[in-house]
Length: 153
Image 1 (cartoon, rainbow, N blue to C red):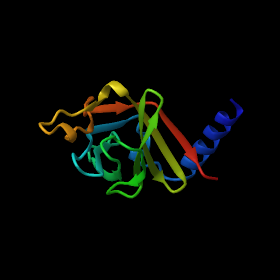
Image 2: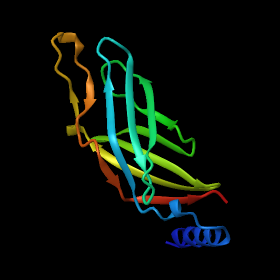
Image 3: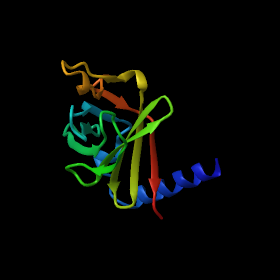
Protein backbone atom coordinates (compact mmCIF):
# COMPACT_ATOMS: atom_id res chain seq x y z
CA UNK A 1 0.00 0.00 0.00
CA UNK A 2 2.88 2.36 0.83
CA UNK A 3 4.38 1.70 -2.63
CA UNK A 4 1.10 2.57 -4.33
CA UNK A 5 0.76 5.77 -2.27
CA UNK A 6 4.35 6.72 -3.09
CA UNK A 7 3.79 6.07 -6.79
CA UNK A 8 0.66 8.24 -6.80
CA UNK A 9 2.57 11.01 -5.02
CA UNK A 10 5.40 10.84 -7.60
CA UNK A 11 2.94 10.87 -10.50
CA UNK A 12 0.91 13.73 -9.00
CA UNK A 13 4.02 15.82 -8.38
CA UNK A 14 5.37 15.20 -11.87
CA UNK A 15 2.09 15.97 -13.59
CA UNK A 16 1.46 19.11 -11.53
CA UNK A 17 4.99 20.34 -12.28
CA UNK A 18 4.39 20.15 -16.01
CA UNK A 19 1.59 21.30 -18.29
CA UNK A 20 -1.24 18.78 -18.23
CA UNK A 21 -1.99 17.48 -21.70
CA UNK A 22 -5.53 16.44 -22.54
CA UNK A 23 -4.31 12.93 -23.48
CA UNK A 24 -3.10 12.38 -19.91
CA UNK A 25 -6.67 12.25 -18.58
CA UNK A 26 -7.55 8.95 -20.22
CA UNK A 27 -9.12 6.32 -18.00
CA UNK A 28 -9.26 3.63 -20.66
CA UNK A 29 -7.70 2.35 -23.86
CA UNK A 30 -10.24 1.77 -26.63
CA UNK A 31 -9.12 -1.16 -28.80
CA UNK A 32 -10.66 -1.72 -32.22
CA UNK A 33 -10.14 -4.13 -35.11
CA UNK A 34 -8.17 -6.69 -33.07
CA UNK A 35 -6.87 -9.42 -35.38
CA UNK A 36 -4.57 -12.35 -34.64
CA UNK A 37 -4.10 -15.34 -36.92
CA UNK A 38 -1.50 -17.69 -38.29
CA UNK A 39 -1.17 -18.33 -42.02
CA UNK A 40 -1.84 -21.91 -43.23
CA UNK A 41 1.30 -23.69 -44.49
CA UNK A 42 3.50 -20.88 -43.16
CA UNK A 43 5.47 -20.14 -40.02
CA UNK A 44 4.15 -16.56 -39.75
CA UNK A 45 1.41 -15.30 -37.47
CA UNK A 46 0.00 -11.78 -37.73
CA UNK A 47 -1.32 -9.44 -35.05
CA UNK A 48 -2.95 -6.05 -35.57
CA UNK A 49 -5.15 -3.59 -33.73
CA UNK A 50 -5.98 0.07 -33.40
CA UNK A 51 -5.94 1.82 -30.03
CA UNK A 52 -7.41 5.17 -29.03
CA UNK A 53 -6.70 7.08 -25.82
CA UNK A 54 -9.88 9.05 -24.97
CA UNK A 55 -10.70 11.87 -25.13
CA UNK A 56 -8.63 11.74 -28.33
CA UNK A 57 -10.45 10.23 -31.29
CA UNK A 58 -7.31 9.50 -33.30
CA UNK A 59 -6.43 5.82 -33.37
CA UNK A 60 -2.86 4.52 -33.30
CA UNK A 61 -2.26 1.61 -35.67
CA UNK A 62 -0.34 -1.38 -34.32
CA UNK A 63 0.80 -4.52 -36.11
CA UNK A 64 3.40 -7.23 -35.73
CA UNK A 65 4.42 -10.71 -36.82
CA UNK A 66 5.84 -13.66 -34.94
CA UNK A 67 7.10 -17.09 -35.90
CA UNK A 68 4.73 -19.85 -34.91
CA UNK A 69 3.67 -22.89 -36.84
CA UNK A 70 -0.14 -23.17 -36.68
CA UNK A 71 -0.50 -21.85 -33.10
CA UNK A 72 -0.49 -18.21 -32.04
CA UNK A 73 2.87 -17.58 -30.34
CA UNK A 74 3.86 -14.86 -27.93
CA UNK A 75 4.62 -11.48 -29.46
CA UNK A 76 7.26 -9.50 -27.59
CA UNK A 77 6.54 -5.78 -27.03
CA UNK A 78 6.26 -4.29 -30.50
CA UNK A 79 6.20 -0.58 -31.31
CA UNK A 80 3.17 0.82 -33.07
CA UNK A 81 3.14 3.54 -35.75
CA UNK A 82 3.32 6.00 -32.86
CA UNK A 83 6.55 4.89 -31.13
CA UNK A 84 5.22 5.97 -27.72
CA UNK A 85 2.79 3.02 -27.92
CA UNK A 86 3.66 -0.68 -27.90
CA UNK A 87 1.70 -3.90 -27.59
CA UNK A 88 2.45 -7.51 -26.69
CA UNK A 89 0.69 -10.87 -26.72
CA UNK A 90 1.64 -13.19 -23.86
CA UNK A 91 0.43 -16.75 -23.34
CA UNK A 92 -1.06 -17.33 -19.89
CA UNK A 93 -2.86 -20.11 -18.09
CA UNK A 94 -6.26 -20.40 -19.72
CA UNK A 95 -5.55 -18.03 -22.62
CA UNK A 96 -3.43 -14.99 -23.37
CA UNK A 97 -2.89 -11.39 -22.27
CA UNK A 98 -2.93 -8.50 -24.70
CA UNK A 99 -0.85 -5.72 -23.13
CA UNK A 100 -0.77 -2.13 -24.37
CA UNK A 101 1.82 0.31 -23.05
CA UNK A 102 1.67 4.07 -23.69
CA UNK A 103 4.45 6.47 -22.70
CA UNK A 104 2.23 9.56 -22.47
CA UNK A 105 5.06 11.73 -21.18
CA UNK A 106 8.81 11.19 -20.85
CA UNK A 107 9.27 8.68 -18.03
CA UNK A 108 5.53 8.15 -17.42
CA UNK A 109 3.64 5.14 -18.77
CA UNK A 110 0.11 3.82 -18.67
CA UNK A 111 -0.24 0.07 -19.17
CA UNK A 112 -3.41 -1.92 -19.71
CA UNK A 113 -4.02 -5.65 -20.03
CA UNK A 114 -6.89 -7.52 -21.62
CA UNK A 115 -7.29 -11.23 -20.91
CA UNK A 116 -8.21 -13.35 -23.93
CA UNK A 117 -9.70 -16.67 -22.79
CA UNK A 118 -8.70 -19.79 -24.71
CA UNK A 119 -12.33 -20.08 -25.87
CA UNK A 120 -11.65 -17.01 -28.08
CA UNK A 121 -8.64 -18.65 -29.73
CA UNK A 122 -10.02 -21.14 -32.22
CA UNK A 123 -8.76 -23.44 -34.91
CA UNK A 124 -9.80 -22.34 -38.40
CA UNK A 125 -11.53 -24.79 -40.68
CA UNK A 126 -9.97 -24.97 -44.11
CA UNK A 127 -10.54 -27.38 -46.96
CA UNK A 128 -6.99 -28.66 -46.67
CA UNK A 129 -6.76 -30.90 -43.57
CA UNK A 130 -3.24 -29.79 -42.70
CA UNK A 131 -4.13 -26.13 -43.18
CA UNK A 132 -5.76 -25.54 -39.80
CA UNK A 133 -4.30 -22.68 -37.80
CA UNK A 134 -5.19 -20.74 -34.68
CA UNK A 135 -6.97 -17.41 -34.95
CA UNK A 136 -8.52 -14.95 -32.52
CA UNK A 137 -12.34 -15.16 -32.67
CA UNK A 138 -13.39 -12.87 -29.80
CA UNK A 139 -14.69 -9.30 -29.86
CA UNK A 140 -12.74 -7.07 -32.22
CA UNK A 141 -13.63 -3.88 -30.31
CA UNK A 142 -13.44 -3.41 -26.53
CA UNK A 143 -12.16 -1.07 -23.80
CA UNK A 144 -9.33 -1.77 -21.38
CA UNK A 145 -10.20 0.05 -18.16
CA UNK A 146 -7.80 -1.46 -15.64
CA UNK A 147 -4.77 0.77 -16.27
CA UNK A 148 -1.54 0.88 -14.29
CA UNK A 149 0.56 4.07 -14.12
CA UNK A 150 4.31 3.81 -13.69
CA UNK A 151 7.09 6.35 -13.50
CA UNK A 152 10.81 5.85 -13.97
CA UNK A 153 12.34 8.13 -11.39
